[in-house]
Image (cartoon, rainbow, N blue to C red; front, top):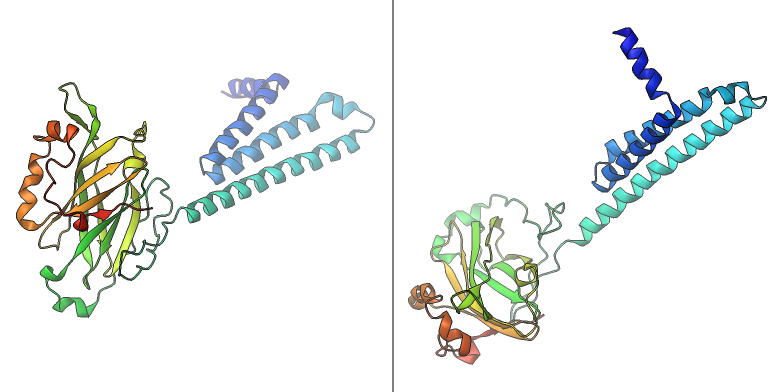
Length: 306
């Protein structure tokens, strides 16, 4: 066993092994650093530099050189300098990542007409860059015990003319829990194999809670589609919104011309069953987007603004 271990150590101490191995370890350290695993990156950097420096110091040509002390000092100082600069690089990358996460917080909720601007939503999940953060857990409020489910009022706000994004807003004095929203939207200018407008296949999402008089967003919806929809394409469909302690779900019609703008409209309770007919009438929607929503007054349609 000791002979085998000695043979392995001898092979690891060869110049070709040390040169290739230390370079690979340093490269793995760079990969770990950009993967935000800073502890592993620092260990790999130190082992890489230490391995190469130790080989240079123990090298036969170094030990026989008349200025070996100066050479050893130079190698040690250079190794410490490289290791120190590598650790500073890690610190810079970590600081940059933290700043990017902080800048990914959602902007304050845009002010609807004749309503107060909601306060900015806290950001406890800033580590996720692909989505806006979830609101912080609600504190128990004794005043909410007297509130009834019928008083809970959620709504959505759509923004961005180039392809809408979604805000969820709690207009009531009660904390909403287990909120979820879903979509049924088609591209009127992109038919499927049957010649009818193609479904965009959008996936809904869920929020654990939303404080009273608060909002969260924007959640990119159309902007998250890859490849992106071409400018001028018309999209039409519905958005549903509900929660665990909501008495009624809300459903909205939405129509938008990509890059131009559009509108959305909350469907009255008595008309919500018509949502199920969207795909049945999608063939007619291709030529006449107002076929199904012609009875919606223009004044009742909320514009999709930036």
